[in-house]
Image 1 (tube, one colour):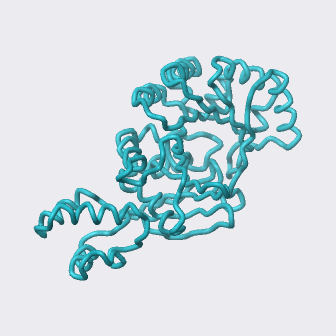
Image 2 (tube, rainbow, N blue to C red):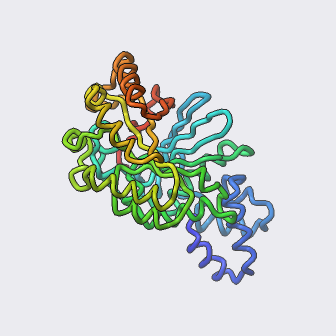
Image 3 (spheres, one colour):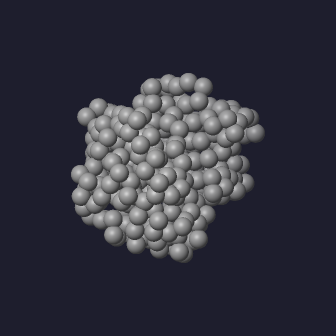
Length: 332
């Protein structure tokens, strides 16, 4: 919901200020799928609200999934489409949200990058993805949020920061900062800016190779922000926040040799707060080749020999293209 539009409506109708706060509270609660369900408002007010604005800026076009994962295709007011994913870890429920329609980075292993950038999402379109999922699972609520959907969050900086305030605020969605994670492909100037926000929100870096030349071939952003510059920004982050920094590494045929493991180990050993998350590569048409099970195990053995602490992440939703790197839509 566009809160500026709501403020203008409240003023136009000469309504008391508490009505604004009441409607906003209802909106953030996730209990209501439309204004008509807000029975604490008069019938006349509900009718006027329904006639003049939409409760959510995203509308479900399609939903698929299983017991652990759901993926929804969401239509925006201008006809563009995004995808958002819900993952049920049993102990908590996570929403994977998008920050852009498409993505400008063109990473070779990612379906979203093949779309190019269509536009940034607004603050409301980011927040409404979470409210949408809360509506679907009510009275349960989203417990964690990860910005690992479509787009590069740090390239939609201003809207990202405002959305984070709402997601974290007790007057908004009230999701704890440590239960929010942002993944960046390595926009180093924004890593510095994010550090200076002095927040408890988690940061993850999509690394995928510690070999500069190879990283440039799979992640064109590495030509602008090389590994030396990226490491400096990452060290700035951990030294100023004293918080763990996560590095994501998708396991491909082309980045799982012993040499790759040694380069990766040297990078991770740069600071004791650097931590490695290994991810089985989720295949996309025309993308990179996933490492075989034997290759994955050999690479893990190399990392253990080099005394690298890591986790091997579980992949959700691969069967219906809902896993990391698989989100993509057609514009309009």
